[in-house]
Length: 452
Figure 1 (tube, rainbow, N blue to C red):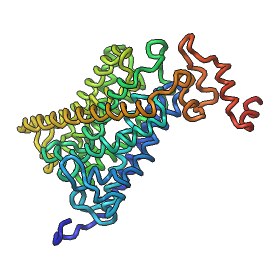
Figure 2 (figure 1 turned 180 degrees about the vertical axis):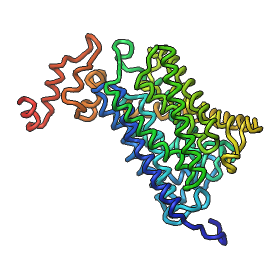
Figure 3 (figure 1 turned 120 degrees about the vertical axis):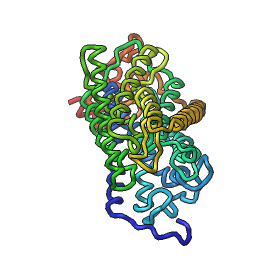
Figure 4 (figure 1 turned 30 degrees about the vertical axis):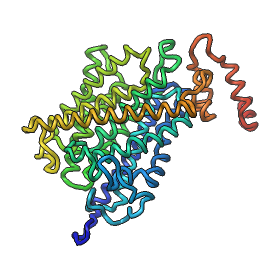
């Protein structure tokens, strides 16, 4: 706030809504853990859950130390300054550059949940083969070098995409395109899982995935409607758009499945809903409910096609849980459709899109999409090269076959849970050998119980 400017008044209602929204977004991380965890094989389920949850710890600490300052501090057009490093000056007084009616600390904590879940999304592309310590280093490097500057570009004071006029209400570019693009790069550079093309890799717990999708849908109301940063009409509009797009996408996915395979699956329904939520994220605060239906349905169709295409190249591209098809493609579609359907009748602080007489907005959105993909793809590749040269990327083949739950964490989601889906012909470690290895490493009390 500039000297002499009127004092900013905190609204109890706005503050309560933003704090509740931050908690809703935090809930999305365990929701993502269940969504991803159900899709992998049982021997890798805990590792997958851990990959979704670990960023909540690492990114939150990084955010307080330096991340928030880099993302939202006043600096250049490319990255924020360090005046808020260590959360210096981030307290109970509002910051008028971002939210005039809530404490600065509330805004900062709402934003950290976005940072945490964004990098967690990438884990779906590298599950069942990446070293867990390497992944933790990747989380730290990626958040600092990619997420923080990109958030500044789009949302930070002076950020060049914000100045250009790019619209991203809740993270189409910052969250979904960035995560999807980086996931694709990681999948290519990490290489495919050993069992791809040799065995049938099916979800081990579909109920987990469906419950996870439900939690994501629930949390997304905080993600999108909370981005209004006030308990007002814009939050209500974003809430409606969010739900409507998810419902439209799930419906479209079911219809596509019925046409193509004559049946609809629970995994497909869950996936369709999440894709609708992804697609509407950049547009939620700028479009009408009818436009949200179109965004959700078009996003679902685009991602559905991308998944079918990716499956044809699975021998070379092993994006294990289709992160690029879900988040990258749907994020791109949503960002571009924002430039088509946006209208100031919904949000006077936004912009009109193509259908409201402003075709130039679509061009601005396209620039934001291309810039995000080039930046995230290039820096992600550099991070992966550095990690490969220093600490290594992949677990040994024997550990991959045994399962990362045991090899990386020394625990199992289910008693004996890794043995039922070991696969791979002559390279498979026999169940008796694995049992012997596990028993030898158990504490004596646990070993006695196992023998009993």
